[in-house]
Figure (tube, rainbow, N blue to C red):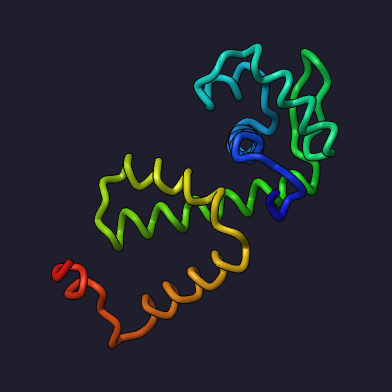
Length: 141
């Protein structure tokens, strides 16, 4: 069980994809969601019904999909974690961008709000501290 009331990693991925599509195109379509998540279009319908039942999306069969305010809030949190984690893996740990993106996608679901906040605050402190150069420390690893 997660902090969003039993949202699985898969459902979080849907919310994140819908937010991305909605930001780009104002609305999302099942076809675009399937393409973005690299799954079959028929698989999308069941998940959209689940998200609509939880009141995270507005969805009518054969219609457009939009996030509700609560769905957008959750999707934004997930996206924020993803961007922050990807930046950490890529910029700080020097992992290649594709691996950083895939790893961020996995970790974003496992990290709860409290842990992420502490992680973010720690990294922000390191980034803003003139005496905390992590580059030399990374060379020793």
